[in-house]
Image (cartoon, rainbow, N blue to C red; front, top):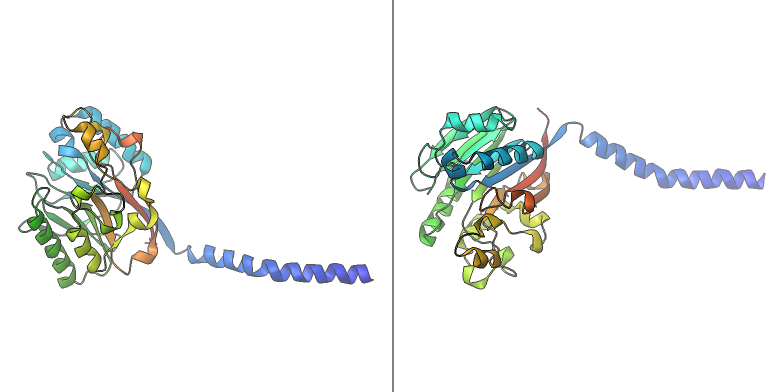
Length: 286
């Protein structure tokens, strides 16, 4: 009898211990039933794969994007691309929707698995342009800031923040090649390359740097790749690892972000002079 009572008591204690765990697991599972995980990648593709003529790079890029299967892909340096040509490229990796900010110079663009609604194409005051699209009920801003003039770059950053505020974009992602450094990277960025004003402007506007949140210092560089090794400055460039490619989100989206990555491994060493950056997040199911 004593043995039976002891066994019942142990089972009772065990149930008391396991029950909260099962309840938590059930809650976690139920919490995700109305949500879906999506991946977003931003990539500077270096002169539009030589204005669309480098078929080898295009083929390897297409295969890599297809393997990663992002839901939304932002692109910089779509040199030589029209919107029709971008849609053709995107179809190769499973994105039926595409938009481009302009069809000359160094355009930025966006492709997606789901419909894209173009809200605005800003040219004046935005360097290589600012493309504003609505995808998955969120505002996507794709840009590429001035590569050579710090004052113009800072003004572009101010213009973007003003645009976000004036349009009350509370569920917004901003991404692209910012040609600027984050103060979060000061511990490993070459002191002669410091240029924190642009990223600090975004941070002051409550835009959150997701790659910083999820990526350790040693893995947080996005430029340059090994494709520049053959250039006269190739060796020096490899010694000056920088992070100049970013994905920011507004306050309301930050809790939904669950992972980030800079794809600076060998798969992307010779696709562009930049490595792509990506984030994963949960959003409501459609």
